[in-house]
Length: 292
Image (cartoon, rainbow, N blue to C red; front, side, top):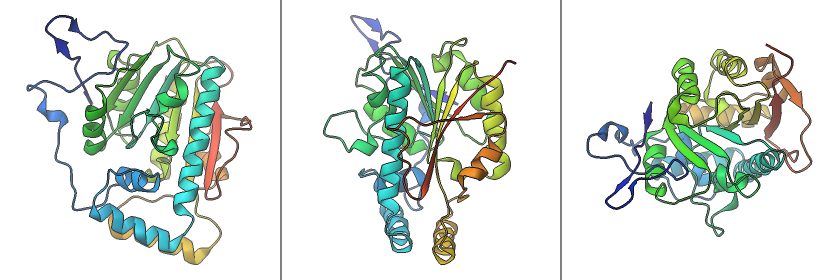
């Protein structure tokens, strides 16, 4: 796990916790691992489909093959991401004050002219909850480098970025519950898994969702967006072959399959804004229930 260090200014000292963390000093070069541009990366492919510019030739080649296999791929990705952002905005308006975007991927700044689907989570949360605490996590070194470039921007609330792997559940939970995340340990957290669980196998997904249910404070929520395989067998096979050829993990699931893997979580009704699940995606809101 890597977390950026507070910037130090000659006249003011370290930035307060209410601001973005910024680029680490010379002694913390381990947070800048080599970005592999010669092979596709899921975060960059997703960025391309959401209207971003942070991708390389290998990512564009994969994207073109996916468009050929499924012409609606980009539209469904954008619609699902918009549903996620609308849903977390509603949760913030209902009083949820802590959010964790796991596998956050490459977003943009929260500039009003940025592509809507690429706006970061805090752009949807902070208008309704200016004091919200937000933590972003990802394992992709380019995502972390990208975050460093944007973290000079001051935002209200407390927002941090950690480099952790969703497949390493122990370190992930330690990071979320540790001091570097900046979350209040006794308050509920809304965890967002937006179009990322298809990279995990069924056992990995079940382990992650169980660890979140058992480790997070009572009243926490899960916001899930997950691409499913669809009913066209030829299209499913082609999409799977594209992912396999690019070395990208691909585990599409139906809503029912997600509910099985999320055993112990209660499926909640989606508000109307967050309920417009795109064709090709399942968008779900899960809640903890009962007592421990």
